[in-house]
Image 1: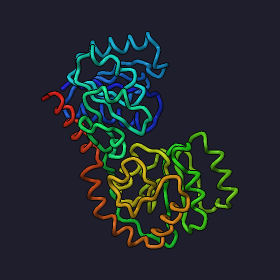
Image 2: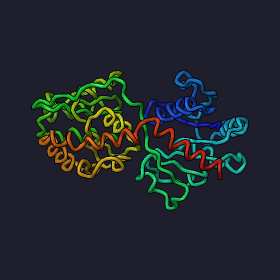
Image 3: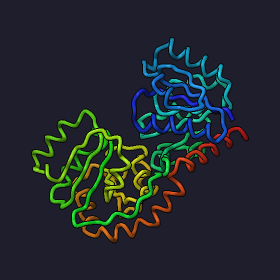
Image 4: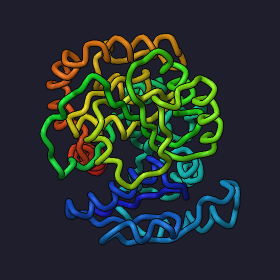
Length: 331
């Protein structure tokens, strides 16, 4: 099967990671893959027919749209798979003339999903994201998957002071300001990995609340997996999230997770480990409840780890995505 992937982003977030891993994985599965994306991603794919096109420019740029249309048309793929709102909005008007079975992936919540509805199938990264569509006939849920960690380690012995980890860009969507506020009165250490525009304001918040001994901002790190293994639990405090990838990474590393109710979290975690978004008191109570009964928490997560191994690996994601393609081609 020949799949043409289109991505308009030029950042280094979960969307870009997803598309690169999907492209590489499909090649390993024996498919031919053409990826249309910004030239910066060319070195990150292997065995992929890469077509560099900077789609980060304005989505109403007529010259760019003309180039994109003719490039997709010339590739003659069996399936066209377009990722996220910007690329979907750029491609949607051309679908009638392209005459290619088409798939669009919605990675997060959007106010306007009209462009997605023009595609033959829509992949949603969680059931909550899928629920945005009134017509569910075209929609398929495929959860984000990650590579299974290679460095298996023995279960970490928990001492009296729990080490918690939070991961993500330091932006409002990740809710780290809420997490810091909720950490007041929690007798545990918290490490936040990631960088972004909110770093200075978050450090000021930590200092103002006198939490310097309990919370550290480590910035960007290349040893996230190692830090995850050295920690006892992952905490997700996001206001808005499509995946999140960190949920998969933690569960596949046999680390429990407590989270706000975002993305695919409720597809995987029982509600006893979830709290409402943007509710500091609920987040504080969730942390306090499970940290005070940590051994019970670890025991409760054993079947969840098994569920993650079945549904949150990159192999599972690839298998379910290919099933969507085959569904289209077979008619």
